Amino acid sequence: MIQDALSRRLIAAALGAVADEICRDHYDTLTQEPALSARIGQGLETKLNGVMVFGHRLRILSQDIPDRGAGAMERRIGADLYIGIDIDTEQGRITKGLLVQSKWDSSLTTRTSAELNRACDNMLAVSDASYVWIYSASGVRVIDARKVRTRKKILGKLSGGEGLDDFFDDALACVKGDFQMGLPDEIDTRQALRGKLKELSVPTGLIVNIKNPSGVFR
Image 1: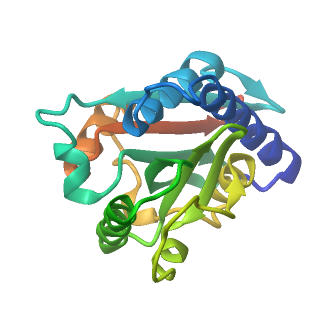
Image 2: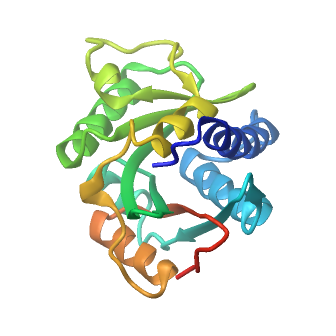
């Protein structure tokens, strides 16, 4: 975990700001949710890879695996995005993962509500570290998949949730995330990410790797 609260908050705020901007830019367009998740991953890599924040160097990697059928991979597990948090500390390496299903904030119908519930069930069958990202005109909001499933019927717009800055802050503080879904200790991080996406059958992946100045990237 990143123990310094200010550094952790600044890193989380930077991640959230980039993702929110991309979400706002694509609101009211024809972009579908999985495609926007992929754009957010690429945008984070483009804008924040190599950035230093209070002595912590960020390495952001995103990866897409082509789908062989409309929604084929996503349907298997319910997630359209895997997020890996990879932190190197003086005490050693911490790695964990999270699953995300994304939805526009447009009104949910009976059909799409049932689809969201199934997606949450499928993700939660893999890990409790499962979340729904809501894409809105103001940015991204995050709801725990377990809270989504406690609602007997979800119609209309999804409300509530937290911002991405709080979401990433908790992930970097080790409040959120599943250590069983972290990346294997391989030399090539991008290769490790590809392997994790194939293992979980998730089409898009994002790695947030953080090291202090004395660290060496894999």
